[in-house]
Image 1 (cartoon, one colour):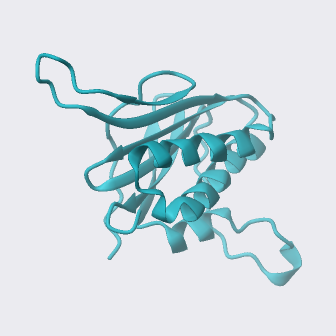
Image 2 (tube, helix red, strand yellow):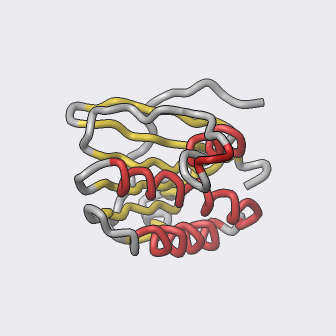
Length: 158
């Protein structure tokens, strides 16, 4: 069953990295694997790079079961941010007890539109339909100078 859209979640650490923070000697709780990557304006090379980084994050987590779905949905969000805005964006992904959360934050306030493409649209216009169909939860969260589009995949199947 899909969960309701909600905002928030931990902030990723280690810009441009996917890493696990080991439990500290003083007994603090270990941080889950996290990823944060800046996406350059109009740089479509960021799409395969984001997929590789996410694959590594899931490998570190030790739960690569839904890696293909996670990579596909991440590609869609990254592509949308690069193609439909004329600005940089930030990809953040983290794994928590409930599963994987991926978020792409851009700096354009215009919200994405979920549309059902017709046969004449070719391969365009299907990104958010895929996200809606395959993610366990997804949504759009506004922030001061833009928005973040996110999805989650539950740990049970991730």
